Image: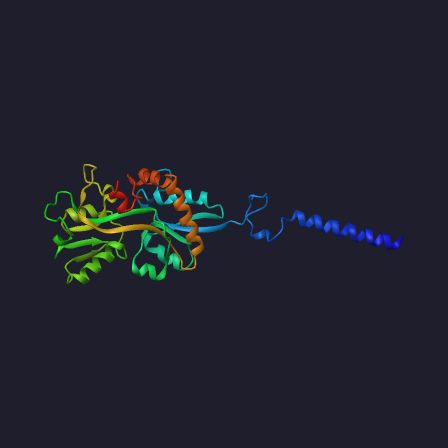
Length: 286
């Protein structure tokens, strides 16, 4: 009887341990997010910090109700829905601080209408699938009839933002054309751009057609116009650290998904005024 009691006790102890293990959920509970997986278990969700700004109208800004919104913001929210393995959380800051914050691991990727240039490519990773495409041209006062192309800017002042793709293009143009342009760099947000151009402090800037609505005159209509041929075809992409290839690939998959079902085009029309998701080739073959 004594031998039987010991065996029975061991069996009961094994059943208790087994039951406790089943109730614990298995694995490392601290790393699993709450929420059910496809088979009724838990699925790990990785939090991703997305850097963006608040001063870019229609792209990333604070609306009248105090909500962060705009094209880039709402796109990221849509991608978040399609990538259940991630949880995207926004962190807002000045545009000038975004790349440094990415480099120092304060954020995981940037959503702020960013474009490639050689300096950025050297330090950062870009996803491959563009989520908007813009054609940049010389931009002048709407009443200006003397400037019709970049060739007309020889010896004139051209206003641009430091480190922008437009600035890089103008700097390269100067290298190839004996410093033909007098580049004037802005010291902050170009909120007074219309006045700067109309008062002749500078002669021109670089902009896309969609940006003209952001620079109204006294009548509420665009005070500037684009002239000449497109000088830069810009693919807008997310910027990540070099060690974030997996996240980059997942973002590309989700962007392709919103393109295929028409969601991306709808967001572009809603926030940017027209469909800026087509490449130059696609636009010219319509």
